[in-house]
Length: 130
Image 1 (cartoon, rainbow, N blue to C red):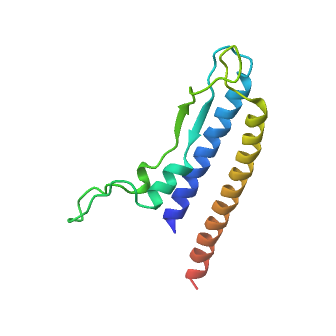
Image 2: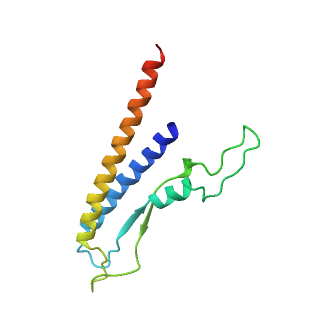
Image 3: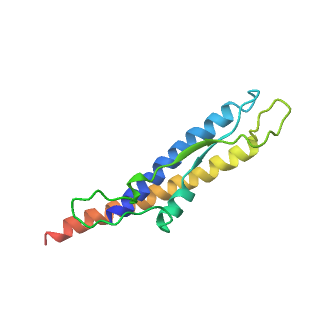
């Protein structure tokens, strides 16, 4: 149950950072040679959940776990592959606005899910004493 809360929290952090990156891209839409920045999280999470990452075996209870989701974090990268304009800038304002709307929906969905998880934990704690 707490693993879900941890993953949802990391998703919220990635979404928050994505909103900052998209806002920065929009602010620099007219800056010559500016390259679009992106936040990668969902692909890293998918790899983590499918166990496509290196995972160590614990043969002793005092071993430090290797390959759990504690290391899961978003990554910010710069897309230098293409330029859409002559000034070297590769920011498309329409794509950025669509990405911002999509990210807003993603953030609201994750925050609702996290709120529901916390409410269930509170219910279990309060009903458990009866």
